[in-house]
Length: 337
Image (cartoon, rainbow, N blue to C red):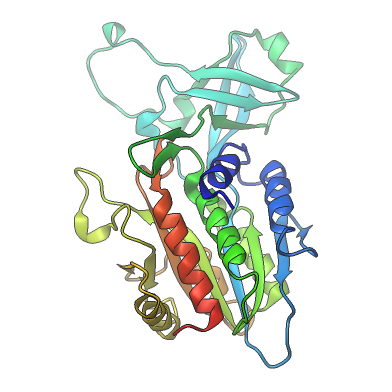
């Protein structure tokens, strides 16, 4: 499995929360190589890995396949598209961003930006109500192609940076999907300590909704949310961040299972896999929050890939972290504690 091409292929599919069908179909095709029974259930991609044996605890591997974006709310008489946010958008970076409007066909556009010559010099951040997209089309032309509620995403493709780093959009959390797929590749000929089910869940960015229904159906004993977390960049508080290239971030939180956190740490030490600790004082903001209270509860933990510039068109990851995350997951599932 080529990790880079897998990450890039997944990242460049446009699928905002609630409109994940394209990403789901791509992920389904990839997952069926390891889980032939994989299917899409209520939007989620799910499949059982290997032969499930009686008496083994059940383990859920999850990564979400949705991404942030926008929804069309209105078309003005002047032909500008007004939008609302889907998920947490950093409004500071919106002016002049290229976007794609996903109507009956994809339409290129740009978010309007007032030239600095025509401003008073203030640096106020745009409110979502003030965001408008210019496609060059008239209202009449747009209404033939665009419906209210259609999704909009940043127009971005992945690019290589120095070494094994890449930048792009929707790396949150498509790189997590890729790490799970690579873990399954590493486990193909292994004896497993768990009955493993994979969930590529929807609507994480709007409240972990896909994880909630997926976990209710699967009802695992243990659930690992494979997501991204903050990688240190200049100007950020180092104590709240991990570092690119230094391995997966294992979560510790009162809302997580300390038992599973310690087992993952011991696994990393035993397998000589670099890792980092991520301490969260409350909820994690990931699907693990849903898994821990599913039905009668599951022992949940987070395994996160460090990522810079979260929820922007220029997210940055190090592919070695994707690989090391997969190796940690594989070692844990083999029972190497």
